[in-house]
Length: 326
Image (cartoon, rainbow, N blue to C red; front, side):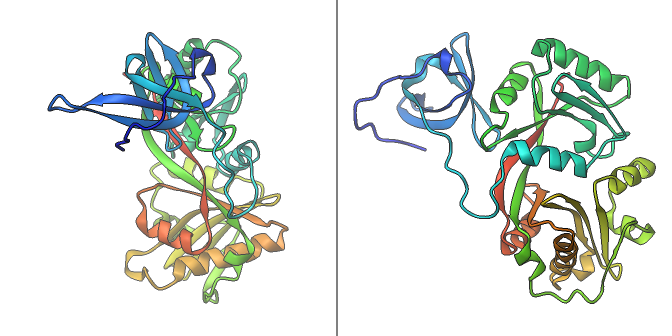
């Protein structure tokens, strides 16, 4: 983004502002020798050795030379989203963790190390919902060793984009050589409109168990025993199947209904089956007292995004898996 200089510009941030949301303007050089100014808004993750690390809400960390700064200031937190149920990261993060449980876990201060024989990064990564209780470098060494003992790569799952998320940790992970591999959005919505969606749910069957046909359509069961244990675990778990053409998974946890594994066979897409599966699951969640919905989706899944947009889901925050560098 190119910006024309206007009013007087001042640098009103210092290393003491690490952890705060800031807006900075810097000078960048073009290949032809000319220069321009560009802005970055995000959380100041670190300011060391003349370099600022600013993590934007999408999880990208921008490295900025202190010498290139022409202006900078602390800015208020991003305005609260206006659509869907009110929710804090502190409330939502444990709900999501309970919906996708590992086979084994170990606490390291406020961090939880999770493993499930490699079935999904979510079940095989550190969930850092507090301070590890030891210096970060030592904590990361402990994490790497713990996963190595299980012949698994070491991952840390960290969130950005909402109040209370972990932009500073993202910057620190990158500074320690960890690489962001995969990112996804967490979306939330009111539950009742999903249950009221215009869809034929007559073919949708709900069960507490997933059968072979369900697993076949799901398709992500490289470690079958581990996959079944993860899929079946949660406060109140339901599996939906529409005559073997579409599936879905639901976990009801208090006021929250978490949707996952919504899949439609390639030859049956664009027939409203995904909407029908979600509507049937939403009605079950309403019957159990839930009122709000959440799900996780990768930002490049265009078909899923169109479905979820139509059902009223909006981005709450993003999460990212950082892998230990070699």
